Amino acid sequence: MTSKNLLTALLPLVSDLSRELPERERYRRLLEAMRALLPCDAAALLRLDGEWLVPLAVDGLSDDTLGRRFKVSEHPRFEVLLRSPEPTRFASDSALPDPYDGLIEGFHHHLEVHDCLGCPLFIDERPWGLLTLDALDPLRFDSIELDALQAFASLAAATVNVADRIERLALRAEDEHQRAEVYRQASGQQSKELIGQSKPHKRLVEEINLVGGSDLTVLITGQTGVGKELVAQAIHAASPRAHKPMISLNCAALPDALVESELFGHVRGAFTGALSDRRGKFELADGGTLFLDEVGELSLTVQAKLLRVLQSGQLQRLGSDQEHQVDVRLIAATNRDLAEEVRSGRYRADFYHRLSVYPLQVPPLRERGKDVLLLSGYFLEQNRSHMGLGSLRLSADAQAALLAYDWPGNVRELEHLIGRSALKALGQHRERPRILTLSAADLDLPSPSTAQENPASQLQTASSVAVAVGDLRQATDRYQRQIIEACLTRHQQNWAGAARELGLDRANLSRLARRLGLK
Image 1 (cartoon, rainbow, N blue to C red):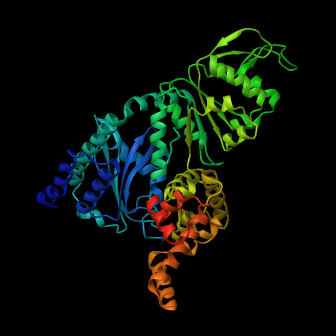
Image 2 (image 1 turned 90 degrees about the vertical axis):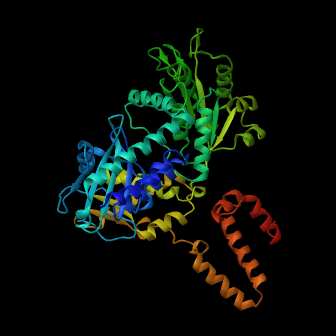
Image 3 (image 1 turned 135 degrees about the horizontal axis):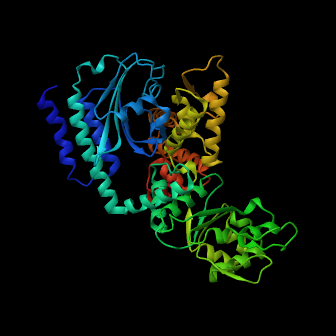
């Protein structure tokens, strides 16, 4: 590789440093330049987050890779790369398993032997993450000079440094991260993140960041399984209370007789079995956040007592006359239509309005497009680790089936499906495989509907209809009408969701539907 070639590849990236680019686009251009400079079949940029490596951009790897979270201690090659201050190339016969085996895009056979090298990225002399390159040809990197990769890594570090600084300036992410880190250390748990890149998901994250910095009461609504508790945790982590505890209570899991004790606490002798004083959830959450899940299940009596606490910040333990002052931020969640519950007399209007100061709707999984694959990657990596496999991946028909399915149970259904399917697929092998591939048959999902065939197939169908009737305009209108009706059926007559799937602006879809007689 000549110095001229290296300079030609690096100059556009140097120019990008002074440009305002979306983080995703900046990283995509980085990998694109690296693959032009250092020919390979796959490349990835990963950020080190505690003991996990998080993929920020991939090129040549399957879509679900972006949803995976690689635990460094479970991937020896990553450990080696992070320990080395310089680029490292692994021998083609290395016994260390490769984290990307089976994930190279467009290849569905086992990749037991290939060329692999990587380089750590440092920012302020601290390890920030990794650049990795993989090739199917074991000799592909023979001609690569590691100095060139080191030079590229230095520019890559500058690129991610710029991206980090822009993000901190725009969203004050540095302070939020520090608060979230304190909370994670206090809880002793891995940070749970919201995974997705779809427009509905990004809008949700924007709202979380907006309301997180306030002290407003938030009512999270959405279907069962969309991840309302995860949203509540994200709001807490983005708030000034992040260093304080977040206490949760599932209101549907307790009978009415115990809900009051759980919320407000009790004194000794307040009821049979109350052998000592006990603080309730409000007191435990003092200074922090209280999350009430399934808040639609609360009785009218408990609603009235909760309303008093929300208004005054004062509560009494059961069996006590003493007042306790608490400072608690309340986040509630429900899958019920509480406005309808109020109209039917099953819910207090004043309590509902206290809860819904800032209503936040979590989109169903069927409206999030390819987020299904990112979430699948996250769950696949979890199951791969638990099952002790080298790689757990999806076949092309499995990915198509996941994208076509309607997901009535949302993210929770997807999580359970991946775990169940992986276990069943493993049981079909007499010997434990190194790479386990889940097919559409393993997932036991319906095949993709004809309405979601590829464009060429749809064009062929439309063409045959036009020939049959002899009138192109009428045939085209009929075909568009069928496509829109099928899409609306899949989205339960939700026009916004149908517009997103069809790639149309909602207003344009509405105008088209009126012209076709659908409205």
